[in-house]
Image (cartoon, rainbow, N blue to C red):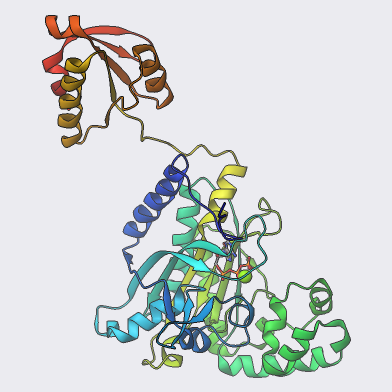
Length: 414
Ligand code: ATP
Ligand code: MG
């Protein structure tokens, strides 16, 4: 037997309605925020992620699915969504469209990680990318979009925010952090010893317990912000206060991608065990330049759909399922079957979910099956019904039965 690859999951026919529900909520919320969908390929040139995500990040160093295609090009399966959207933004000259350009995607994401509950090798992200606006009001809007969706889905999560500053503030902070780390190198993992030199900020994102402990008293970036970055962060906090959305300033959030500037944020929960981050994002004002485009500000987030689903299930949130057939027609004999076949197909053409037996079941078994697939009504057609032109129509939830003319079945359900 051939098994599914480690860290991947099938969505089976009896659970796909949950995905549809979440996706419908995504479409409703993005619509109310004026955000349009963008679809980019599942794979890109590896170079895009090296330059976009940053070559000292875990994602690029350890987690990418990279291979050479038959033409010898290095290809990588999307390990995150932002770089692809940025590439498309530049390539398609989207900076010439009305700004801000508000986009979203729902996409599979591939990362070679150690699979656990809520941590997969293929997962799916709902992501949002706003380009062209540099004010903290856009940061607030993006955060509120995520919050509106999570609330609509019935979830309560806490918001953590931080500012990573710009290159200016980052420079003085990196120096202070490096000095702090140098004195404590023996408490850091091997990777963090490399990071200390190359990109000390990355140490704050390390999941190693000893590194976490060592970094507890590290200097915090919020003490090193320049006036501009400080004002930006204050404005964001003011707007969030105005919206009534509570938040915690957590100066240890740096996020796992190098492109962030100024605002970073996470929606977290304690209900998911170790994998507590449901949604993470921030501002990336240099990403487009870094990828060879002009100076265009950006802000966005990625939300893990599997984690959202897990959280909903853990909380016992009932996801509405409305894919049951309206009518099942049970039949006895070939003539009755033909009549039913005709009616069912007429109804389907009119958009009504109607079903019929395909397994040559007896009448009792057909009723059992209709019950299993949760048909709302069952009509029975046999020889006598064909002769009289009248059938019994049973409403399955309360068992009531009415007599109805065969020829008015279509009209009744259409
Ligand atoms: P984590 O700290 O849990 O590794 P991350 O910082 O790598 O998350 P992002 O790259 O910001 O996460 O991705 C955005 C969201 O996608 C996360 O908040 C999470 O909900 C989800 N996510 C990330 N990696 C995985 C994964 N391997 N499996 C399932 N969901 C994931
Ligand atoms: Mg990760």
